[in-house]
Image 1 (tube, rainbow, N blue to C red):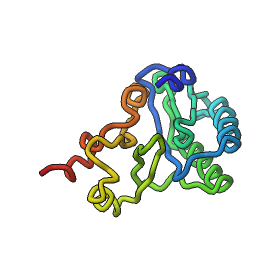
Image 2: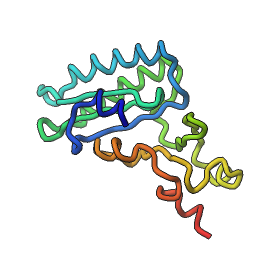
Image 3: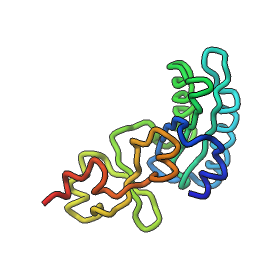
Image 4: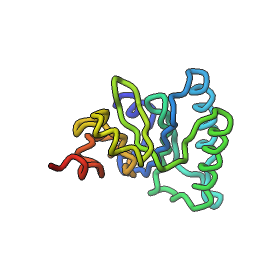
Length: 164
C-alpha cells in the first residue's frame, strides 16, 4: 500500500482506528479533512503528554488514526477527542463515519457499503462473493492495515455465509 508507507512513518505495532465513510470524499472535502486531521494529530495528547500520532485518508473514504502506544498510550479522554473530530466531520461533510452497522467492500475499484441486515441478500445476489475484498475493520495494528486492509469475504466473519 504505497500511500500508507509514504504518509505514515510509524512502526508496524502502532495502534490503529479505522472509520469508513458511507461515501467517497470529494477532492475538496478530502483536502479540508486532511488539514483537520494533521492539525488534530499534531496537538493530540493524553493527560498532557503528546501522542506520537498520525492520520490519513485511504481510498478517498477511510479515515485512519495511528498512535505509537509504546511512547504514550492514548487515554479514554484522548480517544473521545478523536471521536469528537469525527462527529464534526460527519456534520460538516454530511457523511456517516461512526455507524458500526455497515460492511464495506470493493467492487469495480469503488468502495460500496451495505447495512448488516442486507448482507445475506447481497451474497444471494452475488454482489458479494467469497473473493470480494471486504474492509478489515478488525485491524488494530498498522501492520494489519499495511498488509490486509481488505480481505476476501470468505476469510472474514462472513465465511459462514459461503459454507456449503
